[in-house]
Image (tube, rainbow, N blue to C red; front, top):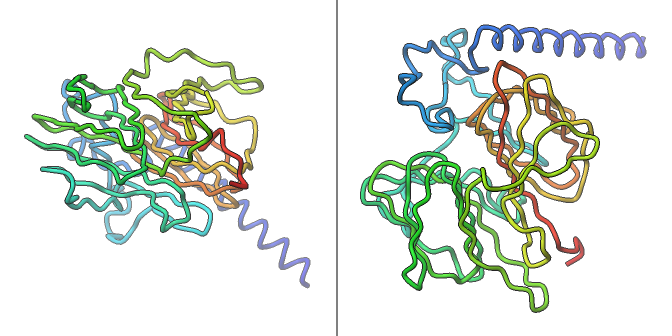
Length: 310
């Protein structure tokens, strides 16, 4: 009797996964996202779309779930979290002027870094991170001006980024609407190694070899020992997937910039799309497959170059 019950349970789970997969594929073929609403309501005019327009203009309310106002794909568990755009909560940050911030990953989850979206408005200005904290900013929308303590300025547009070492004076200003993805962590010093300010663009970074994999990989920071984390840009064409079902000691913070697909985290399988944020704790099983008609691109935080015992 027990074995029959177990078999029935497994069969129901299999049927549920097949049903979800077919539903997702049907939505993908229809040209809508997993949380798509009628395009006439939510999508901006094609001529006004920026590269990562779905990050700042996400589709929030599935038309077929309009009678379920409490519906969300967001999930928080012991070793991972999926935070969909409908769950992002923005509020002012005292150190920033005319800017709304949504903290998406923080040490309250168990992470050793923070990840947040900063929506800068007209005449906005950043604050400094706490002492000993390093920062990386990635421009997802608009244009900002970064100025360091020496008065040297850089204009950062979409796909530009800047790494700012700990205790490095700087400010970020915007005269119009702009959205930044921000990563911060307390720097883990290693001997006499020091990091330096980096200002660059994603397109300047070479494609790196990915033995056994078919996705495209770029790294935004040097791989030298001075840097205790890196940010990866990973591109998947529709139908491509990770070959390795990863389990490792590194933590991840991920933002889908483009596309849609399926993410496995632990024993759960999640439909994901542009605008979604994922936190992965150490040793959580993880795997991704890209679906839909366009490529997936995601931005991925990964801690590196430090002994896990320290």
